Amino acid sequence: MKTVAIIPAGGMGKRFQSHVAKQFLLLNGMPILVHTLKTFQASNLIHEIILALPSEDIVPVRSELIEKYGISKITSVVAGGQERQDSVKHCLDSLTKPCDWVIVHDAVRPFVTGELIQKVLEGAQETGAVTCGVPVKDTLKETHHADVVLKTVSRNNLWLTQTPQAFSWEILKSAYQKAYAEKFYGTDDASLVERSGKKVKMVPGLYENIKITTKEDMRIAEALMMQRNPINFRTGIGYDSHRLVSGRKFILGGVDIPFDRGLEGHSDADVLLHAVCDAILGAAALGDIGRHFPDNDSQYRNISSLVLLEKVNEMVKAKNFFINHIDVTVLMEEPKLAPYADRIVSNICRVLHLPGGCVNIKAKTNETMGFVGRQEGVAAFAVSTLLEKRKK
Image 1 (cartoon, rainbow, N blue to C red):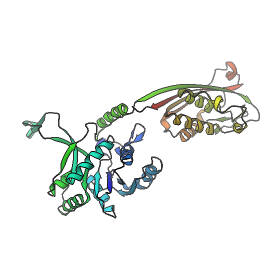
Image 2 (spheres, rainbow, N blue to C red):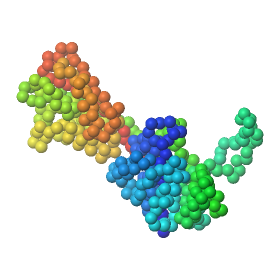
Image 3 (cartoon, one colour):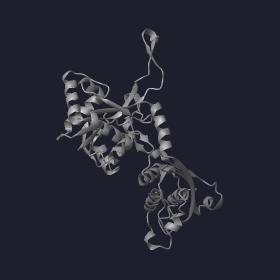
């Protein structure tokens, strides 16, 4: 018994009014689409996933979904259509061999569960066609001209329909052929099956199985995700200082800055990145940079601190921590840091896989006071915020 999941994600999110299609918006650090796909990937009832995407996203998104997020069940990615129904049809048309069951689910319903997938498939095996939904809870009013209430509609037997919806291959294929022959567009796949004369069974869905259509929905989704995956915020502070000496390169944030002296140290003595590493390690309660990369170990002699930063990132990820934000203040009289700040931010973001808005670099003089003021050395302070994802 072969089951294929169809995930239409070809829309541009016009109602969301965002320059990013809503299926690619980040929810708890991952695109909404990925949350949805991961549930189908994890279900042992699903054998293949066919995905519809905007045509310009097919190549890069497919590669990232499979390689970065491990959605290995994706066997085909097709161009989405003008309407959701067109996207589903493109997916159906891409099936080179008939399957037994087809389950269709909205890409922007990320709270679908494996249990709900099982429930609709079991129902479909009994009746041939199943949708899920939740009973209407609010009072319903029907209005007419000028929004004047015509009558109150009974809530009895009324459901808010959701996805996933599951059908036998033959029933869904026949329903789509009839709809397109008659140029009919429905609001979901079950409506096409109903129109073809087949009975569709309703099974209980989940109130939290929301479809993210508006910005208000996104706020609800973020609250639901926080409840499902509580996040603990951790903060760490890092500090480092190095002496300025002749005959050394002056490296800050992985950038070789022209200057008549450089920083003394066993590694490249990148005081900025050392402070960042200590801030990250501190937030994760993993000690300090000296413990992990001691200055008496020859393998770290003259090593780039970008390499050390990458190793620190791997350490905190192994402990289920994720870096959220970094703020750095560098204390030095000369040279001016401003011309190199963007390159430093870019280096840190590249190594830590962070968007640019998550890293901030500042520089201050010490007004000629102390070892910094006398240009004997450079110091740096860093603050890092980590997120610890805890499963309930």
